[in-house]
Length: 567
Image (tube, rainbow, N blue to C red; front, side, top):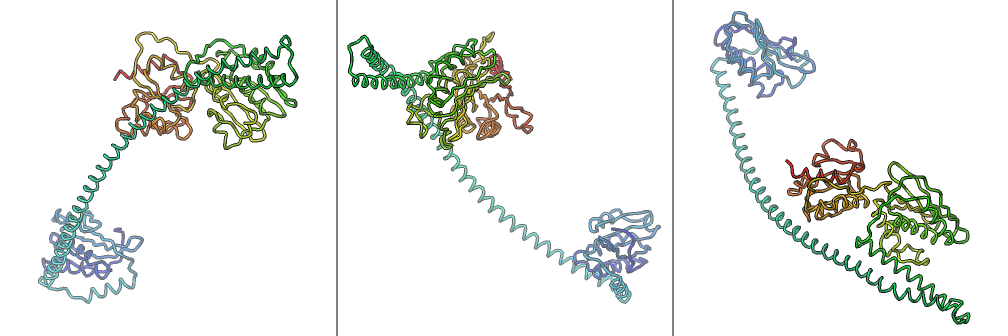
């Protein structure tokens, strides 16, 4: 900014009167170069502060061109500079853009609002040479007028500040009133939420009671129906026995119909009884080594006669693996899937094959049957639901829900993909060696309530088994929203949380708990098969620990819970 420029005026400070002339000339030069009134006063005042202490100095006013045009004033006098006032320079520094003290001069600079061309500089120089300096009294009068203008501006600013303060106080009163109103509304909302949770607890208890009543009803009705239905089948078989008295063809035909209807009814009663057992938790897997080849061979031999003409049952030999599971329950699942496939396939093939991936066994049953409409695929595992077009084949709609419950009991999961008109594939995925709760040495840690949030029913079942004897009560949730609702309602002692879930991952639940007051104190253990390095840094900060699913055991769960008693 203070580079070389074009001189427009030079003067020498010979006596004290010249200080007033310097002030006047500074204001005139600033005005001629297009500066605003306030900047003119700044330049004049700064020169007045410097000029009182540098009598005998030469003062040069120059205009600097370039990207940042400026007025540069150089006060040159080696002798005079030794007497300059530090206070005067400091005061000038507050008024100008730049004030620099060098060995033999003082340099002051102030930015110009626009470029000044050579012709205009020549006119400025000529005007300044023609103008005559005023007296000290005239300059003092101008200075007083400038001071009056400044005082009026200060008063105007003060009045404006007072008005702003009054408006701010009014705004603050309005904000406080709004805050009070919002606080009252929030309190009312909280009371409503508490009441809603209480109602939800009551409804949940009613639903549990209704579900238990349904299971008892199904079990009782199934037991009551099996005896007379079995008797009907037995009596029909006796009447059709060749050793009994001969029957007419019509009588034999009618008895065949009776026996077939009774057998069909018995199958439905058995489905109801099996489902009731599964829901009530009375089915306990008996784990032992399973000869998978023998299971496949038995199913191949017993179900091949059920295949219709034009349908080929293809059961591939399974791989040789060391599978530990419940052979009876596994056979029930596969028989159910194969029977369904044969029932709804009019032509083509029904096949079953198996493969091993890591520590898990997958068994797929595929058919070329009618398939399942896309809009109904989400309901195939619902109890009593029958797909359109499948009702003609009979059934209660309980087979697939029962098969999925058995799969969960074995620590596995049953999934389905289907294309209407092309067929369906049901895949059973099981662990080769399901985790068995091992004994924990020493005192067993205890917690009152535990919440398991995982979309995989097999994972929830495993954690429930591992928490047996550690948690007095275990609740389950299949997604983040249900997990947060249960956490707010039951205030569990600990939460076991999966990360990868449909409809929102576990990090959302962690953030919600961390920002929910009392819920933030609930310890959370992340149990996941995902790579935690995929998640941004800090999102798992609210979790007490992160445990890999493949390393989960009763010892690990006990150690995690025991750690809650520490600091």
